[in-house]
Length: 307
Image (cartoon, rainbow, N blue to C red):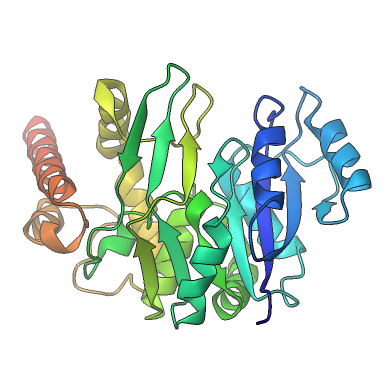
């Protein structure tokens, strides 16, 4: 049986605390032929030097030219898609710099790709420095519009078929300037695949340990601090702006649900609230979504009275 060739795209930034353990878990994957491509956002902790050393000693590692400043993981991953030749590979995986992969992560994911899915993602086991561990479940049934409001789970669990990776790369290149405004690459990838009616499998089995620490750009949505941060993004308009921008990029801006988000009025927000069951996968998130839409309605009405 042919061993699948898989390209792993890793975005790094000041990652010396975690990179050695993460990279080891990638290179030690079972039953796949891995080539690891690393793009480093300009760092000051020795990350570039470490990546150069491992490239010199490990044929399976290729490091992209240093020096660019991306300012976030999303733009770094977009650079990886743009600059890496993905054509020789059977599938493409994404990797953060600070997790630990289970040895069968890629082989298990590729089984689902080979069986007809365009993409694979999974649950994860989140863990903290104090020893806490939590299973983070993302495998709830997909609904009609969830991809316009959330990713399929952590992007570090994603495995894309060669066909999807190639099409997404072409999509990125065709919309390069507009894509730079998208903060979360994993959300955009999921939205693109679903908008193209591609099958996406979310595995109930965890494929990796998902490290939580103060430097996480996006971590587990747990606790009062995380909830407050997300509420702030909703009330500031960031959430709906990102949703509208992604919807526009993937050709959904003229759908009945999306209409009016650019300057969301009360009617548009009520339409979102009514459709909450079709906008998020997890039941708890459907309730939160409904409530947040109503909060925004109240804010709009209060603003109208004051004006």
